[in-house]
Amino acid sequence: MVFESRMAVGLAALESEWKEFFTSLGEKPFRATQAFHRLHRKFAASWGECLEFPLPLRQKLSEICPLDDLNILHSNTTEEGTEKVVFEARPDPRGRPRRLESVWIVSGERRTICISSQVGCSLNCRFCATATLPFQGNLSAAEILAQVYSLIRHRKELPTNIVFMGMGEPFYNYDAVLRAADFLHHPQGLGLGARHITISTAGVIPGIERFITEKRPYNLAISLNVPLEENRSALMDINERYGLKDLLQIAVRYTKELKRKITFEYIMMPDYNMDSRSLQALIRIARQLPCRINLIPLNTDFEGFRPPTDEEALKFQVALRQAGILAFNRGNPGKKINGACGMLALKMV
Ligand code: SF4
Image 1 (cartoon, rainbow, N blue to C red):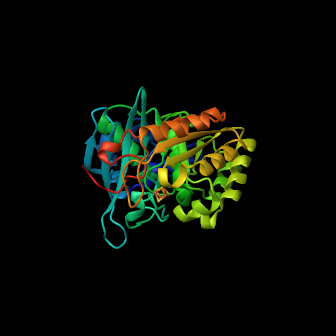
Image 2 (image 1 turned 180 degrees about the vertical axis):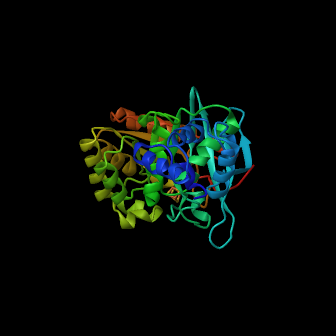
Image 3 (image 1 turned 90 degrees about the vertical axis):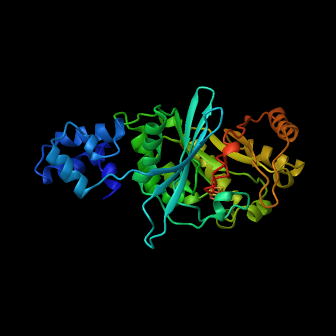
């Protein structure tokens, strides 16, 4: 109830549930609408901020379903305004502190929040710093939302985009992630357009299937990184479970059934996936379906991996473009603060 109380308000399906909750407290159902507005539009951190409620009701709600926000433990900001924040959540069942990271990314007019869906990650991508942390389970939908609302209050501005690309595999926490996305999209909440919300998976096929079946309106990205089957298994354990061939089949199905482009994320690692064989394999994949490729230079030397030079990155991008592939270099705006892709390991600079 602690965090979930924030969740029980809002979406049409949940409104009656929350109205029932207020009625059970002896309150009028319109209190549910007021609560939704305060929590999801005004980003209240506690029931004490619901000033339209009489004091006894505020006190009662604080006792029976406290909102408890995520606490900001640390934050670091680059000159350009990109900021990495370490949050403290409720301790895990063994009493160990749970810490997670989110990044506010400034890029031109865009203000993107990269949020976490789990504490640590159960996957073991060799190039990712998050994989070195202990895995401490899923975040609740309310904890996912609290990252966004807390950052909005902290920054005193609204994001233009949300990406589920922080710690964890979002499709291993499907229900909470999609529930949080629905709230971010809700017109009486933050009201972000569906195409401004992106969910990125390392390739959990059942999650993608469900996403298609449910006709979810959000962008889907696949963290592809390695376009050759055997090499992908060597760097990403998930490929052992859900192989590249099946992954591409479901990606094609996504583009056909939902009539949308898919995004492939591709972390450029010169000694592993930028040789001509990998390039040709990537081109073959990209020609099979409507897609765009987001190239992300590996950010730092990490356990035998090295970042590409600017020349290597440009050469790779140009080769893709010359093959007619939509390829963008997303750069690494959070690099200086350990807040870029694959660098979320609770390190502060
Ligand atoms: S890259 Fe993503 S899926 Fe892979 S270990 Fe890191 S957080 Fe997990």
